[in-house]
Length: 121
Image (cartoon, rainbow, N blue to C red):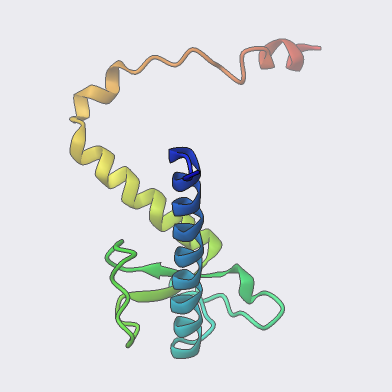
């Protein structure tokens, strides 16, 4: 009897994850060979002990653009990498929404709601 549609989808996803992992590992290894083990933003230096905290960032944000000369990559520490992607998302969200749209956002949670009472004790 043939495989169910769900089994075929599971196999496809497993192959895709395996291929993506190999591709990611490939360009990361290439970048670590080409570029110095220094964060391109904050200049933090890395050694064999902490190189796992050094990531490869795609300058054009296109993870399919992986030239072998490394021209689209830069090594960033995990903190600068997160910051870069947050800035990129903020930029994209700002392009979609007008400035006035953000004024009407109402927050329902106030983490400091009971702070005044605690300080008075």
